Image (cartoon, rainbow, N blue to C red; front, top):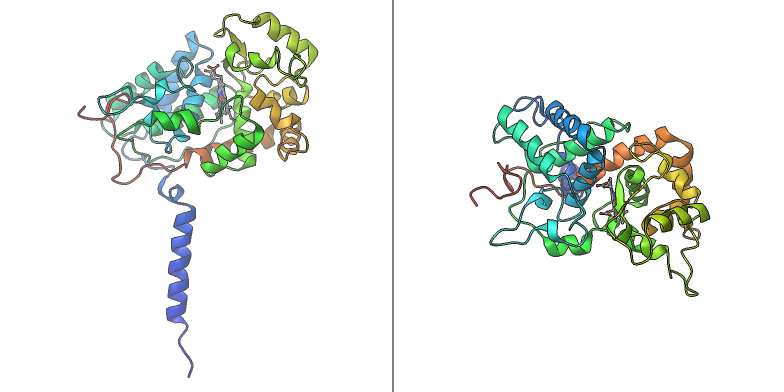
Length: 333
Ligand code: HEM
């Protein structure tokens, strides 16, 4: 007897579809045209507010880009980072990687207010962070990409998660890789997204242990070039003010370009987590650094792809979460 193949094919297709959604739980639900009819100017409104802020704060584009990263790594890109303390949860803003460090929340409020006046109750704060990161990179000379939209906002924050899930500048490379892998990002995403350290600043306390008593015999980190070491020691004396700022990219501090990778090749990575990408013996990251250092458009293409990958980390969609009217508070609280 010949059995019809249909039931088998149907089962196979169902299993395939189920597997596909398991492996790509969210990306299929975000869309470049999500606000095409409900808020068609959402990108240009975002860009205009950032351009205004840039006039008095050349660092703001870097700060806004970082907010999207710190949002997405903690329970997905859901705007949880933006919530202030409430009666029922503690703000992620006070977690160690964010406290006295993340900035730009007032500019996010301004973007939200401008969008609310054009399209009330429509655009999530999580999407605003994704749009602000894209506009910031582009306005600083970096690549353009089409942002996928349709995220919704969380009803809670996860301060403990922010303390453990966001990579530390003192993490060994294996831990950086593991923290990226935990949110579905691979080693290429890691090296690519670390390239965001092509702009912005870091406080002395985030790298000064490298400058003094770093090795067993009391010397500085040997993967810092002598001239760079000297200038960092001038800026950040031992036991000095840990909040003094250094440029993450000493060559082109406010421009989004591929100089970050040449800096690593020249032993001028500011954070240990930066320099490790190039200086960890036989690491898979070295060849990626070399290729981006020699080819800015390869870096830009990869950056666009990896930002979309990061923006796809478990967003709330459909009827989950809400569209906050104030990014700092859950509606009705
Ligand atoms: C690979 C793991 C990463 C580590 C360990 C790390 C760590 C840090 C640290 C310690 C600072 C300085 C904070 C301060 O001194 O207050 C910083 C700044 C910054 N980070 Fe990262 N970061 C990582 C990845 C990323 C990613 C993936 C992005 C974005 C896609 C990013 C974007 C930035 C930007 C733009 C700044 C400068 C912010 C400003 O000037 O306000 N970082 N990062």
